[in-house]
Length: 401
Image (cartoon, rainbow, N blue to C red; front, side, top):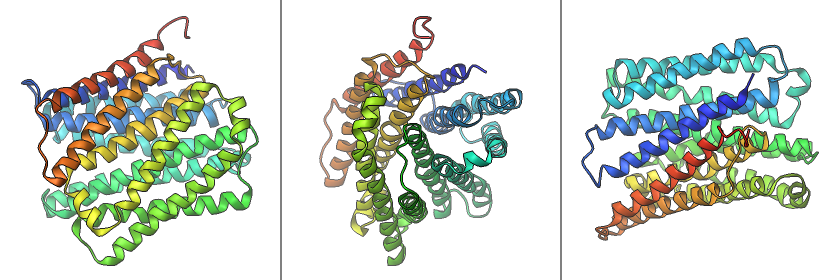
C-alpha cells in the first residue's frame, strides 16, 4: 500500500483549510459571495477530521500494522472515511449544519469507531507492552470520548435549543478531548516511537508517573471549558489541578529529552529536530496559557473574547499539532519538506497569531484597531497558504519521491 498517497490527501486537506482560512480573512477586506458561518464550519471540520485525523491514522498504520496482511481491509476503512470527509467538504459551505452535513459528520464518527476497532484488533501482545502504544491506545479512547459531544448536540438542540449553555459545553467537550486527548496524546505516542527506536524510553517507574499525570491532566483540564459559566469554585480548582498535572507530566518528558538531546540530535535530521523543538516550545506556551485560564478573572475575560479563544485554538492546531505532524511524517519518510517552506510557514503562523492575539488584547483593554489590520492579517494568511501549498506540491515531484 502506498501510504504516501494517503499523506498527500491529508496535505491536500491542510492546503484546503489554509485557503478557507484566507477566505475568512478576505471577508473583512472584499465582498465574498458566500455565507461566513458556513465557511467557518467547513474550515473547522476539515481541519480536525481531514488533515489531522488522516495524518494521525496513516502514521498509526505505518508504525504498527503496515507489515500485516490487512491492506485490503484497511483500504475499505480509509476510502469510506474519505467519502465522509469529502461529503462534509461539499455540503458545509452551502448548507451549514443541515441534513447532508450532519449525515456525513455522523458517518465520519462511525468510520472512526470502525478504524479504532480494526486497528486495536491487529496489535500483537509484544506491541501492547510498548510505551508508545500505551499512549496511542488511550489517545484513541480520548477520540471516542470526544464524540459524546457531537452525539449530545442533537438531543440538546431538540430539548433545550442551540442557545442553551449545554449546547456550547457539548462543543467544548468535543474540542477539548480532540485537541488535548486525541491529538496531543497521539503525538506523544509518536514521540515515544522515536525514543524507542533509539532505546531512549523512560524507565518503567517514570513512564507510569508520566502516563498517570498526563491522563488525569487531560481529564481534569476539561473543566477549563466550563468556567465561562461561572460555576462553583471547585471547578476552578479542578481545572487548575488539571493544568498543573499536564505541566508536571510534560516536565518529566522534557527532562528526558533534554538529557538525551545529544543522542537524538545525532540520529534525527536537522529539519526534524528543529520542527520538534518548535512544537515543544509551542506546547509549553499552550500549557502555561491553559493554567492561567484557570484563574477566575482570566477565565471570564478569555471566554468572553472570541479573538483570544481563536488565538489559543490556532496556536495549538497550527503550532503544536501541525508542526509535530510534519516532523513525524518526515521522520517516517512519508513526506518531503522543502527546506525554505518551514520558515515561511512559521512566519505565517507567528504573524497571524500575533495579529489575532493583538486584536484580542485591544478588545480586552478597549483599544482601537488599526485601519490596516485586516490587510496585514490577510497578508500573513497568504504566507501560510504559500508554505502549505509548497509542501503539498513538493510531494508530486519525481525527484522528491
